[in-house]
Every structure is written in C-alpha cells, then in structure tokens.
Length: 341
Ligand SMILES: [Zn+2]
Image (cartoon, rainbow, N blue to C red):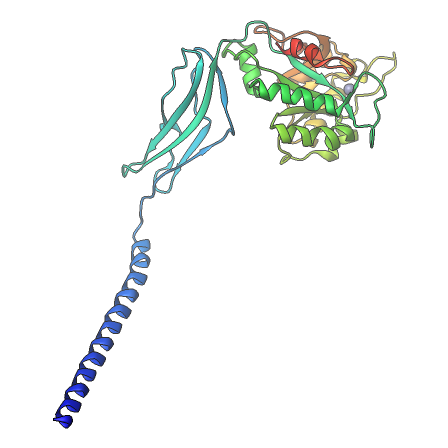
C-alpha cells in the first residue's frame, strides 16, 4: 500500500511538471508573438490620426463680423498638409462673446483629430489703433532714468499687467497692414508696442517682462550699433529697422535720412534689413523724413514707416507717415489706460 501510494504521488508530480512545462512554453510563445506583431504591422503603411498644432498660445481675439481663420496647422502622415481642411464649430463671429472653438480635421482614411481654441469676439475698434512708442528702461540698480524717455521697469510691468488682465489684443504687422488697407477690422482693445533704438536696457530689463506676460513688442534697432543683438528665436520680440547708420545728424543738423542721396539711403536700408533677418517695418531716426526717404523705403520693400508724430493709426492712412502714442516716464497707470482705451 505504501509503495503504491509513493508511485501514485510520483505520477502526479510528473503530470504537474508536464503541465508547468507546457504552460511556460505556451506563455513564452505567445509573448514572442505579441512582440513580433507590432513590428509586422509597422512594415505595412498605416494612416495615423492627423496632428493639429495651435500656432497661437492662449486666447485669440476677433472683431465682430471678422472671419475666424484657425491659428493652427494640421499634418497627416499620409495626406500631408490638411490645414485647409480644418473645420471650425462652436463659435459665432457675428456675436460678441467668449467662445471655445472646436477645430476638426479628417484624413482620407477617416481618422479624425480635434483641438480647442479660446476665442473672444469683440466690437470693432473704431477710434484708431494705438502704436505705443517706448525708448529705454531703468531699475535704479544697473540703469538709471536720465530723462522722460527712460521708463521705470516697475511701471512697464504694471502696464503689461494692465494689458493682459484686460485681455488686450496684439495684432501682427500683417494684420496692421490689412487693417490700414481696410481689408480687416481689428477688435476693440488692440494695441501694438514698439521700442526705439535697441539699447541694452531693453534687452536686460524689458524683454524678461514681455516674456513673463507673453506680450509681443517690436524693437526698432539701429542695426549698425545694436544689430549684433538680433536673435530670430527671442520670444515675444520682433526685430525691425531704425536704419543701419542713419541715426546721426547730417549737414543741416537734421537726420542723415533727409540729407543723403536715394542710392545711399537704399544701400543703408538694405544693409539694415539683412542685418535684422529681413526687416520690412521702419522707424525714422529722429522722426525725420522726406519724399526721397519714402521712395527709398518703397524701393527696398519696407511696407510701413513710423514717425514720432502723436496719434493713432486708422484705415486709409499713408503707410509711410504713421503716427504713434508716446509713453513717457512719470505718467500714472490711469493715464496709460486712457491712452490705449
Ligand atoms: Zn531713435
């Protein structure tokens, strides 16, 4: 009996061992298969879901009645660029309000991608676009205010805070161009920031503020002096021209731009544009210009030029004698608010 029992137990062990070996083998083989399967599928071209990338962070602001062109691109591995096929829903551009637009795109295989963009539709700007003019900045540590062209960096921060808290819109130069041509409307609370010259106080003090508040500003750079600071990747900074070497007085005490020949001005403007990565917006040194200066700008592909005359920009204005709104030191935040209202 005892012997029999021992044999029986041995037999059970053999069975269990066999089962374990088979289970391990089955598991091993199936694991191997799942490892191989994705590899096999990769060899067969697979149409993936298209990818929508928003080109604008945060909220987009539109004037009522303006068409919403998605600030986004759509790419598909099979169909390529599907940007033109993005469909938009969830927004009524004829009614002022806050919307969450839904962007959808489908590829030829029927794969659908969606993205969302926050949009504010606002009444149109009717009292002109303020293009602000700044110069230098100080903090009383590394830079000191010398005259009213020097703005305390804390005041600048207050202004940027005001603009962002009140959801101001910062149109691109293309939009300003189209606005002057009467092709588009701009929303209320639109503003453009420009800074003249391109000295170190802008880069050291103001640029970090622009990046902190995500507010874009154009720096009109005297490229012979400060062109070496040009950096295409500097976020929220747009480099444009304040001439290459015409920011000096000519024979009659007026700026070189109203003294030099057209050929000489053209040469200077080209050099400045090349130094600044293809600048095509201009700011007259000392605000001095004449017909020759304007001809030279047109000939070299500059699309707009700013003076230092006070005022706002409206549709139909001469693009080569555009006014600006000066921001001087010592004015209150209320004063600033009224100048961009
Ligand atoms: Zn200047």
